[in-house]
Image (cartoon, rainbow over all chains, first blue to last red; front, side, top):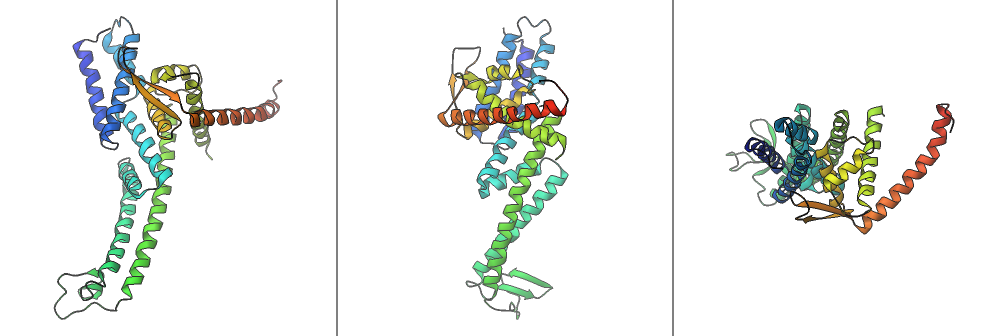
Length: 206
Length: 114
């Protein structure tokens, strides 16, 4: 059967919101394929519903049984992105998963923020180790305007960083250690987020 | 482990097996698979079957193709791959073994005649 113009608008609106939600976290190609499949499902259900004495009611029931666009998009992205990070542990996948998981609540946001900070500080340590041999007078431990470790360009007049090349192995070790620990914690946390997402689906009877 | 946690783990494992079993006889599209699952006690929000199918495809257990002209819209059909069939067989055997071992214990514990 053919939907009325209002019914068509409702379906197109649903698919539009779903595609926008999916594209926030999965590839464009995957989002397009998922939306095509969802549209096929909805059209099949509409065709099965026969005469539809009350089209609006029947269509809303079909969409309700399918789940809201945000629920479906979240299920896709959680299943795909978190799965990717949990199985592969590749850095880009884990970072994408962290970003996605951060959007699921305030506690998750703060945890993801701390983990991102861990990665950033780890990279910072390694950058200091790499820059010290190149800019020995600009990189190191500074006791000027408080205590700080890092690079200053240009170096403050008449002040040099304390210590010497010991900064290189110390920062390299600290950076690598921090990156490894942060990455392990991130993967573990992502696995927990995925588990909790599964529990929430179960609680909703999904 | 909280009961709902255990239940969810059981559901996820069983659902994956149920989907593989639903596809096992031949190619199936999403709604067809879903209708097969409606006959079981595995209650699903319809939209969540597709992310699961996507994951199984990513894992190489099933493969898909779009077919036109068999419904009001093109349908995406899924079929088991050889690794998927092997996984389905192994999971089925393990499920049956666990079920066979637990059935008499449950009957005894609940005081039911078998």
